[in-house]
Image (tube, rainbow, N blue to C red; front, side, top):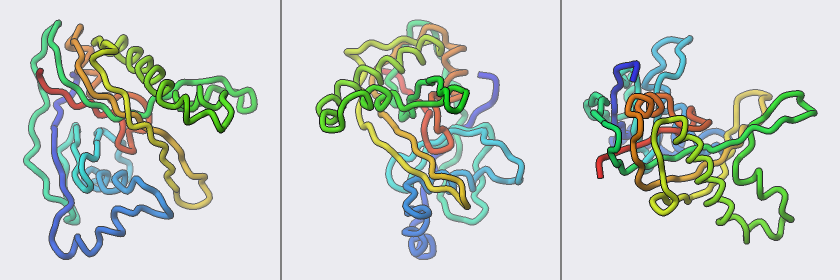
Length: 229
């Protein structure tokens, strides 16, 4: 890892003031299902030109796990935040770890209309070639095969290995996030990965965890949670 990292848990407070605002805070704008994007960012937005230097994942409703280069600070206050812990696991080649990852797996395809490559959801990239009435029948098999293939590519670059019989790929879901003004809504998908991995290169692996996996990191994707078996 190149940066000192902090691992935090932040929960929306249970007092009457926050509870009164909770439906608004958690419903998002115009049907957006990802208000966590704004809620978690509020813990790090101490300057208008700040760039995102954290990853997060919503576990239970209103409970967020956060990996960050800076300590989260609740300016409003909306959260109860556990004391951040340093994230500095000591690993060696051959270590086996339990992991959990919510990711937005994509592939890039060249789009001649745009003159550039664009991101495609790894599941719909395959399913769109099937007639609409057949997609449900193929979804699970495609989700499993394409999701695991994507994870293997990540592992090859990130210093670890996985086996098909030791990883669960599940929870395919599509999301739509509205944006301010005339900007079109943003769509992305998520997959859930849980299982065992083997560390091959500890330094490369920890650097990959720091950077996150896949796309849509601003929307709660990409944070790999690990623990020893």
